[in-house]
Length: 136
Image (cartoon, rainbow, N blue to C red; front, side):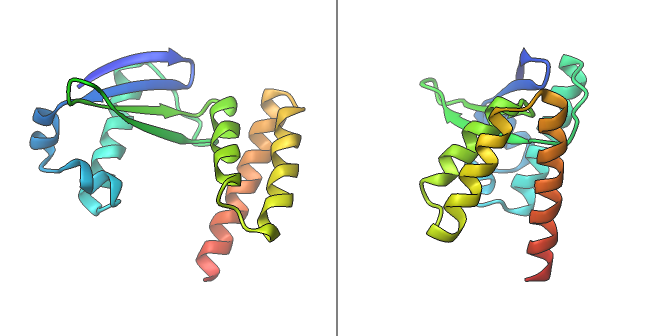
């Protein structure tokens, strides 16, 4: 796998078919979030941190997956707030009317605070989302 640091909290990992074969997975394992696919992503993120000297905060995590023209796959791991905000904006497209308003307010709040306050807000938001999911 190849690694490229793109920002303090953003690293791109490019994987080939040989890399997938080594881990015994297919791209579908990743897209379908199978146990093997999730294991691959966890290991790739760890390798990104080790090779690029990134200390993940475990707040505002996003992952972008892109197919490259040569058949390899790009995995962009990020904990940059601007990437998190972009991801939330993409979520607005499928949000129901009950969720859309509060999500827009949260995005607006994140866009108007400094990095430290933004991370605090995201950590609180993610904690609440996890708690809600565990109740279902």
